Every structure is written in structure tokens, then in C-alpha cells.
Image (tube, rainbow, N blue to C red; front, side, top):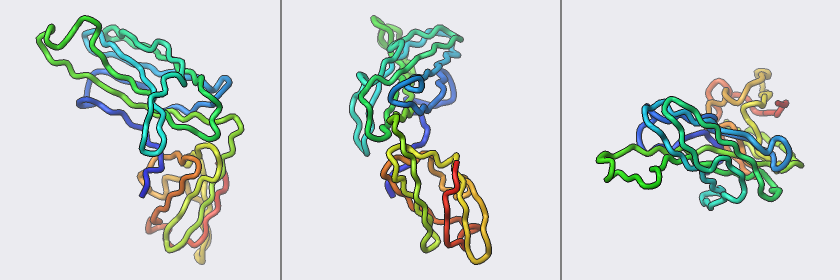
Length: 219
């Protein structure tokens, strides 16, 4: 099955158990206006300075391409003192997309200019965090179709904007009556955002397997 849901995740060069902390890991932005900007906070709990660089990649299917020109990031690099935090602000400056576009905003720890592992006599663990940013057009049309067949439920996003499954309720009906469920009740294990034009089919859990119809009843 295609990877069609957007999950929140970070990539590390080593364990996540210590050092740099980044939040949040996900942003929903509009392509213009007050909701075209937001920020991240990076906290350094260690006893030494940490240097970070921010880059942007545009994601299309299984491919990615540099997209630093689509965003204003302040600062693009930063030194974070021990036991201190640095806020990085982002603003979308690209063209108006026809549909929601996915980006990765990547925070990468770097060595300061003039230093190296050889000079310091030790090897430092460098961290890399990959966050998700979805940029949607202003004329957003979020529409979800849902149907059931052979004890499987199928979802199709027919709109031009990402659809938030986690905020949606579904009315299930069948010979035994009806019930209202949330996204978590399907126990899909997938993320909660369905991109435009994407469909997914899930096997119904045992407690919902006897229902034959489904209706999207709102967010």
C-alpha cells in the first residue's frame, strides 16, 4: 500500500535519548496571510554550544528537491548556548500552490567554522531533525469520500487540500444499527492527514466489521 498518510517524525544520527530537543514537529500553513508563518523552538540541555542549520526540501511522491527559496527562515543558522533555547521563525514565500504541498524543514547540527573532529580529539554526535510542513492554497476545498466493501473501508480525498482525519467523525451503519466513531477507532496505525487525490483502504477492526455503510458527518 502506498505511503499516503503524513506522520510526524525526526531523523537522528544517533539515539533520541539526550541532547537537542525540537518542537513542534509539524506545521499546517496557508500560502499567504497571517497563517503563512510560524516558528520552531530548539532547546540545548547540554553543557556546550550547539550550532544548527535549517534547510527545506519539497516532497513530491517519493522524490524530494531543495526548496530553500520557498521559505524565509530566521535565523537560517544559529548558535544555541548551553541550557538555552533558540526560536527559528519560518514564513512561506513561494507561489500559490494548486493543492496542498508537503515540505520537510530540516534542522541539522553542524560543526562551527574552523573546528573539526580531528582538532577537538573527539567524535561528536550530530543530530538531524526532519519536520513536516504542509502549505495549502487559500481557496481550500477539503472533501472526503468514504465507502465500505468486503469489510474494508476506503477513504478518498477529492479536495485540493489536506484532510485532517483526526478531527473527523464517521457514522457507521448496518443491520445491527448505527454508531459514531472517530479516526482512532479504525486502529489504522497511520498518521492523521490525507493528502489531496490520495486514497487508502483499511481493514475494519473486528468491532466494526459488521457495518456495511459509512457517512462522513463532520469535523
